[in-house]
Length: 414
Ligand SMILES: C[S@@+](CC[C@H](N)C(=O)[O-])C[C@H]1O[C@@H](n2cnc3c(N)ncnc32)[C@H](O)[C@@H]1O
Picture 1: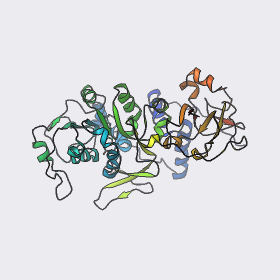
Picture 2: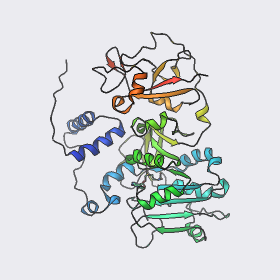
Picture 3: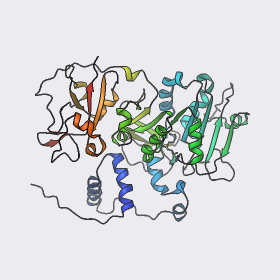
Picture 4: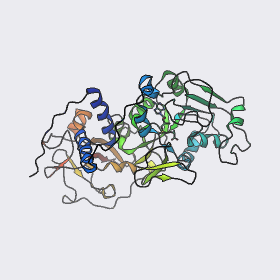
């Protein structure tokens, strides 16, 4: 029998809360995170990272520079043009006549801005606004503006018919901003998407398309939901299990986009970003890139894909589909094994969302460690949830053991 001693650690409440939010997004608990850290110390025989103080200048001022080293590490991933293009062309009809906002962007580095400028006339966009956050290490590198906070806004309402791409592949921004309907100006604040001026831009826009900072994804999508905005944004599927995001999937207010369903994605990262994981590297143009797993487009624009039913071939047998001890539902290990002939509630893996069609199934709830607190008592009663000593707040139990987090679904009556 292994003995796991309990250790009491004194942690600053605010640090604990903020770290907890990060771990929530990654999908691990506080003890697992602390254990990982301790194992790394043992493995490396020293602290597993450099201990530095924050730059004094960065500690002082507002949001843009707050804990910048941390933000840069976690949030500065630049999307590949091909990834943006592959998704956006699928929504072409819905983008027509619309004003697009890219509010976590840098108009000069971003593939979003480039795509929308290059397809402005073809799609028939009404406008494009892109804002750059002062905290971005890319801010002002390509096209520096005199003075200001480093945060700026590019507004495009017209694009010339002549090609805008220069021989070196960059956009001819001088010609673009020389056009009467276009402008490039400083923002008054730091370009935080939560600032009043950026929220005002959000209210004016029809559709938001961007890759928001991973660490603020929940807050970001909640703001879009609050303003009832249409959006196509990049995120990580880990975010699905958060209490702010899962209900949006359950209520069919958000779903995955058309184009990314598996594998990893390449993202550019700023100079100096550590390339210590497999698959990272430097491309032929000297740009650093990393590969990130679990990336998905999150959207509320209807897609063809979400109306394609899953082809089901398996049949229910009590042996192959055991019941949970704490829910009135059966466990289905893989989405493709959902039985064709079972009408009750079924627990499926989170990856079910890659194939989910609301025409075929209804999402009932998320059975994870937060179910007891996050799910309404009406729903818990409906699935006949009974607390189990081992379920840590609502994880499904089979033979006395916890299974992974499961989405409880039910077939839609035809
Ligand atoms: C994941 S990157 C994506 C950048 C770009 N849209 C792309 O994909 O090429 C997120 C961007 O949001 C910026 N950012 C970080 N915090 C922000 C905030 N609070 N408000 C607005 N932008 C923010 C970062 O500086 C970064 O440029």
